[in-house]
Length: 145
Image (cartoon, rainbow, N blue to C red; front, side):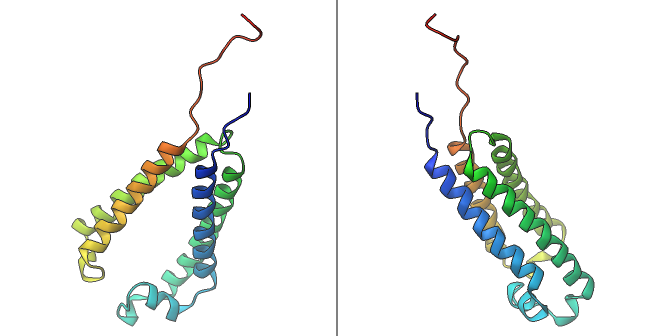
């Protein structure tokens, strides 16, 4: 019996891997002007050397995560744990900006509708990955029993 190809899941994982790889490279090699453009032109004193150094470290972690997703896209059936972890991670990443919206003064940097929209997109991606993930079939006896 042939295995299901999971083409849609492979495409989603490959796309996420590509987006994360581009973001990681931009985080590593981007300077202060790029960061100011990405963060919608905050006051210049808000972007410190510590923030830039932290973004470069995070870029390395994002590139590592991109490689993990790329390898999971090659064989989704054997990497269900990675797909589940990414789905749970998207759920966590959907909740944390909403918490910071209500506990910090983030509303001055970003409009609230952008934060809510980004959270909904992350929840939709988590739901899509959960829907497309390989399901384990019940085990059958070996042979013609």
